Length: 470
Ligand SMILES: Cc1cc2nc3c(=O)[nH]c(=O)nc-3n(C[C@H](O)[C@H](O)[C@H](O)COP(=O)(O)OP(=O)(O)OC[C@H]3O[C@@H](n4cnc5c(N)ncnc54)[C@H](O)[C@@H]3O)c2cc1C
Image (cartoon, rainbow, N blue to C red):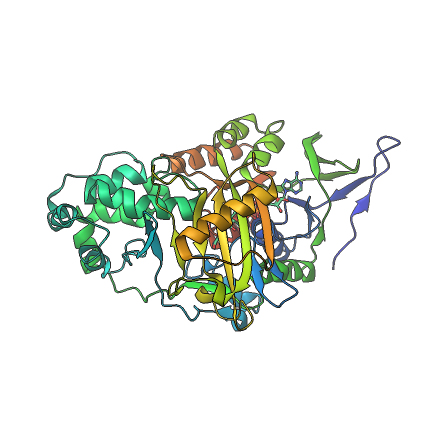
């Protein structure tokens, strides 16, 4: 049975104070997954989401012309923990969409040209060595170097940057032309800033086990190509919607427009103060905000955890979507999209552009195309300047000529945490600090990985910590 929150006598004339079993701060996929799992454990959570909508960085929109836009995540690697199993439990299996009309390949820029990205490297597929050996992007010298890759030295004892890992094993050209644009496009951070053991744990482990990536890739089990990368027919936002619905059915109270200002002590309980003046007292708090807000909120209760969280940087992203007539683009759009390589001669703001209507079925009405560009954070630009910059870069790269059509912008501040070298040690330190205060748990995209399934998995884990089996 779900009991309504117990109203306590007002502790001061202005504040409405309630006592609740658990508070989840943040209604993105991580927080909603936490509330859903708490419900399964017989704990009715109160979810407080600052924004007027749930879903956080997962946001879909159906436009008046019938296109489906994704303003955040546009797909998920569902064969991870927090993927297929959760989708099935929520009844979303029917909504799963695998692929679209474009072949499963991506492009990378080489100057102003788009060149096919050698496939399979990041998905640990056997074909990876072959696709690199035959790619026009790589020089003969680099290809000869790939042949002797097994002879290169042993890995360092400690974590290193993704850039140094690939330079060391496969040569500087692979690191610069293939890896750097992919990492920047997907993780919103430079390959010289992120740690290989967090971002590509499997590749780092392969090197440690086999002493060679080439050998490991050759003997690796054949991965079904693109098997795990899926989206949802009604848009990715179907996931947070289903989590919220499932959570409510299990007793959660989920509220939007509720901004948590600060946490504090209330005897043995935690005091949760909202900006609207209301106060909740609870014995379990799950912080499911972005990393920097989590650092601020946890500071009065567990300062050591705040120190660790405060040291994790998060990058900004500008997301610009276009719905345009197919006839207004010269490029055949025969791939899922393009990641942009850094080129000092052509400084660009765009990090990646997804050809969304080609990558996934059911995204755009016949004769139209949905493009979704992600640009590096540019707070100095007004929205119309941002759109103009995105449009101009797409004109050069794919021959986009249309100046009209639906355009949408989302400015994501502090959206993607940077998994710096030795990030895993940081997470261990965080867990160590929180071990002293079982009332507080954290979840979100800064713990296991930036993707949706990883974020969902941290929500489930946080709920298990907050409500262990009796
Ligand atoms: C442009 C872009 C593209 C992406 N593409 C993909 C993709 O294709 N596939 C994929 O798997 N992942 C993708 N991601 C990453 C993924 O979407 C996110 O990492 C994930 O959704 C994070 O979920 P979360 O619940 O941890 O955090 P968030 O979604 O950030 O949710 C945190 C919530 O907390 C709320 N909040 C913050 N402070 C307070 C407060 N004081 N009080 C109350 N509420 C508060 C926020 O409003 C927000 O709703 C992408 C991200 C971006 C930005």
